[in-house]
Image (cartoon, rainbow, N blue to C red; front, top):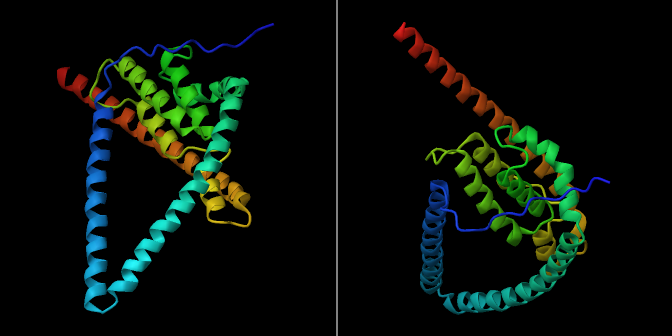
Length: 239
């Protein structure tokens, strides 16, 4: 009987591609910007409260919101622990490997430039499957490893390849079978039915993935035709 096994990934140190440095730099700049925005908002609220004679209610509202946030976080932590444990069981029971096997034919269509049995394809499938099951913490190192492997296949080029662009699109508009984070937030906010958002989330995320894939293929074809046009023009000039 044929048994499907994923090739073990090599987690030895691989220099990250330039796009990883760009993402980290953007995230750090965004964090600094958000810190400034929140500081300005707090100062403005205190100044407006003092000018209107409502400083005490403003401070009380801030303290009350902070204490309420602690309750929401504790409730969120409990639900997140539950779903993380369920996903860990699914991972150890072989469900993740089964989903990788099912989704691999689709991945060959989305990533035609990547060899099917390469470490890059294995890392891509593990990342997509982890995102599909809502295991974001496990998906992040797999995604970084996939980008590093694709960078090696891209021969170290500073420009992102078509496979890299498609991978970023799939991670940005990823489909989650169980949106555990949103369910946990709704449960912590005492929602009557925290699970009622699953179907709308499936519909919107599927539509987002389809639109992202279509536009990515369109842009890839436009770029390919432009390269062919430049190549033909160079040949004509030489002749």
